[in-house]
Length: 105
Image (cartoon, rainbow, N blue to C red):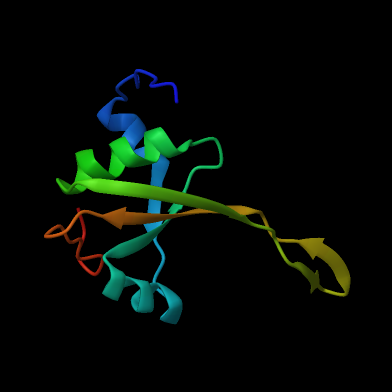
């Protein structure tokens, strides 16, 4: 296994990477397992997401899982259109760490 050095990111980039928390029934269910879901930038990688969450919320992150949610096809005034794709990150926090997503940063 190779270990890569992670280049630190700026505070400005941290705010670009983490767009918003995901507040759904499923995301509240995973909060029982010390996990939090966020909408993130499409070009963000797992290392950047980990740095951003640790930098903005002062917590320890153990794992980051990402997924891309494809945009649905919808009709608008009779014409078909497509919603934008969205990238989400499910962040697992270390024991004793927690993030309250109902309050702002």
